[in-house]
Length: 583
Image 1 (tube, rainbow, N blue to C red):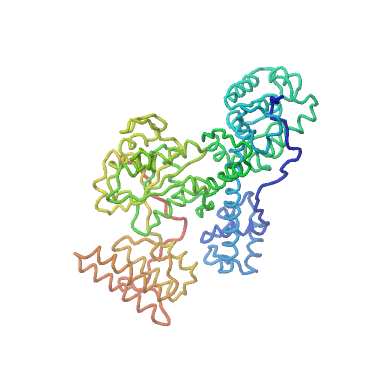
Image 2: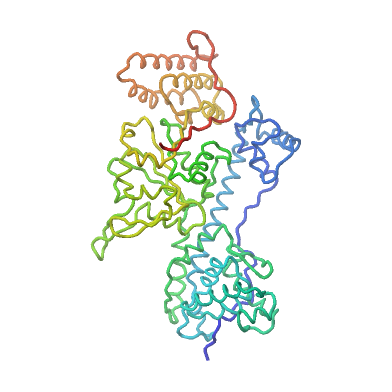
């Protein structure tokens, strides 16, 4: 006679299947200094404590600094933290291992969800357990669906209600039964009489035995504590917030029951599709910008707090617009790169490339397909955190033409409001879909941006930074003979045109500085001043003086206005961004 519940085929549990990278105390403390590289070293050492879970007293910070100084990991120069070459190796390798461990953990979680989400109660390995032939339930999806909807799940709710769901069509009524029980004032699942009255009869009459028999179901559904709490709290367990997005996406994906009969090879090949489909996400990447980074804070304030449609990072070439957009996206998504997508606009870019368009189909000729915006909107709907769409080179096409009607509904006040696409399909833009774009304000096409489009973007200006140039040169161990003239060249160039600090990222010696001039800066200057020979001649003279300085044994700062002195960039916090909502 067929049984009417899942039973308990397993007696053992997955004790611990998680992947954890646990740093020693020295790693944790040094990482705080490592991430504060270039920042001021002065009490109360907020720049260092910002990267620690618990605040250290000034005395403890100084003790750790002495230790790291003694072993050659760092030093303090002109009141700022400087990481040595050995320190960069030590800190960089630790961060690489941490990223790899986090990536491995994410991949295992994705695969576990992909495989367990396909698992059918009735399959070629369970034919002898007496399940009815029309049983089409996927048990782990049932448990996940209940936890997503209810917030948590008590073992009695699993025992008395969900274990009796033998067909997918019965899941909704089972969830409603639990919701109704929870709405009752006298409901207490830890009391057997109350559980029986509200949830129905027990499958296992012995209470202690029932508890033990539910544990394997939670253990496998949680893959040994990775996806679900390993231990219950007052009989209840919750999903791990870190992987809720994976589980929600799986539960939302239709999985029809397949009759494999006795074909075990076909059954396990089907389960393996979960690995091939879901474990292809790249390794999460930890952002390097701090929580108090002014550009990051400006994006958070304008887009998340002030509800602007998107943030537009403006700046000359080399000011780090694209780098910042990627770093901010990683920080907003906790390094989950599957929640980030980057596209680049160009003159031939169209609505059909960005929103929706027809693509070839082998069976039907052509079919209507979602493109980048609608695809990321769907990712956002399935995620419990921010999802970021980066648009690089925003002004290289007509943004109003590319976005079409979605331009209106990217506005903060119209998020989640339904609207119709030209195809007749209905769409929405979720509130957690963040738009970041980059643009050079000096591009000729900027003046042609539609005013309505312009109004929906908050503007954040990125300026060339002498501090960042100095950081690059220090990190590259650039000798002082080259470092001072390079800094002066950068500063003097700003008198004529904006030159981004990123141009100087790879300057290590006199040869690399000369290559920077001859292969990049010279052409940038000639293009900008092709109709101003006087300015061009002045800048070429600057380079000639710089080239002479780096070629001589004792190089001093370049003379400005014949004074023999150098205008130095003031020390202090990074430049605050100019942020303004569009008019």
